[in-house]
Structure formats: C-alpha cells, structure tokens
Length: 117
Image (cartoon, rainbow, N blue to C red; front, side, top):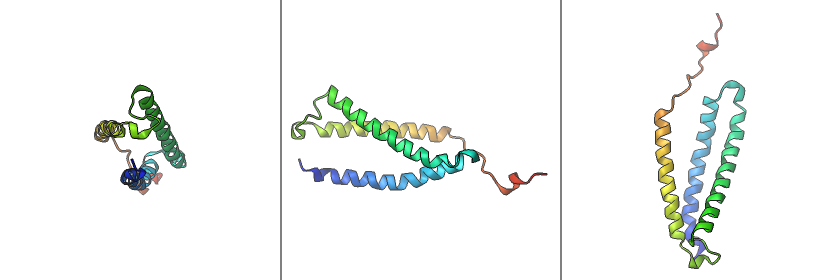
C-alpha cells in the first residue's frame, strides 16, 4: 500500500484545521469574560494537545484489541480503522448539533453597557 493513499485525507484535515482555528479563537474571545481574554490563545493549544493525546490513545486501543493495525501494515485492515473514525466522527457531529442547539450566547458588550450613570 502506498503512503500516497493518505494524501487526500491529510489535505482534508489540513483544510479543516485552517478554517477551524480562527473560528475557535474568535468564539473564545467573544464568549470568555474580559479578564480571561488572553486565555483564549492558550485554550486553542490545549485543545490541540488533548486531541493529539486522544488520537494516540485511540490508535493504541485499536492496536491492542484488534488485528487491524499490525506491524506489517499490508497485512492489516486500515479500512476498518477508517470506518471506525467515520463512526466516531458521525457521533461527534451529533454531539455538536445537540450542543449547538442548547448553546446560549453570552450577551454582547456594547458601548451603552459601559456608560456609568
């Protein structure tokens, strides 16, 4: 199996991250209290780090509990790993839809709110 088969998936992930990170930082800047605005940048890095650890844990779990990812990748079932990722992605998208539906936006701060009488 050529490693070039992974090229389209990696390009899709890169494009997704390019659109995701600015939106995530903007959301944190809008929704965090004023005293925590500087924390937004650190939150992005923390979320990326947690996702890398979870990805590593998932691959380790697959390697320990199945024959899908042996040392000789040609003898494995990488397609099953990708189907597992598809199922997890659909479940994640469902959780996102539920959270987006239940999300209550913080009232935006306007100039009228800052005027003290």
